[in-house]
Length: 258
Ligand SMILES: Nc1nc2c(c(=O)[nH]1)N[C@H]1C(S)=C(S)[C@@H](COP(=O)(O)O)O[C@H]1N2
Ligand SMILES: [Mo]
View (tube, rainbow, N blue to C red):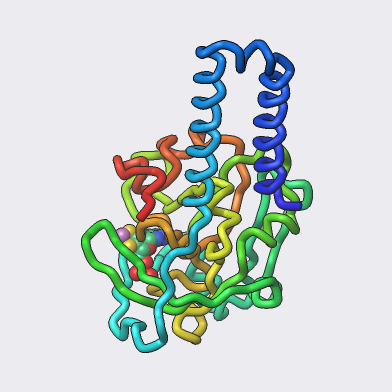
């Protein structure tokens, strides 16, 4: 069972036991006007929480092959010059390994072949950059949820951090390396994939070769390219500028939903 389901189970168990407490005093409560109001407001709260969770699980719109942009704009880093990345690129990424570690039971080190053999998904979606442009692309990749299950998240894991190969900016936050983070609801969303292909070709360098995130209900800057390492954490405030991502450390919103 995925930790997301575990947590939801935990939430439901919590609500059920809160309900049991209320039910224990049922007679007295329903006999008072105030008591009925308490029950009604609790029900409203549960319904709103449920709606929020359903909304977080909704799928992003998917498009038809004819909608695919022929001029999908590469943005931000488009040709990293970091030494480790250049060495991998020189060998066509044959030595590439994705490290999955942090709060996991079984740290992983996956080759591109391992990733291609993992449970996958293909989707045609629209990418929206905060700069005001959008492009539609077709992405194929390993679903993040099953990979996290393979590693086995520890119960205190709350966020997934993506550590990238490229240095985009000044080292104002201790590194200047690009990084991003998402919560477990987005990590287990069915359209959240580690894409190794774009428009039926191996992912090109300008778009994040050999591996980039697609988290389809979020803005462009959440779509981390050049992913080297995935770390499960309880909290991200100790990383770099503390705001959970390269652009977040520079004032952008963390959740960045669209
Ligand atoms: N590693 C890394 N990931 C990144 C960026 C970057 O500079 N470095 N730029 C982000 C931004 S702002 C956007 S809009 C998208 C661009 O993705 P694309 O190059 O495929 O269009 O990547 C995002 N992910
Ligand atoms: Mo962007």
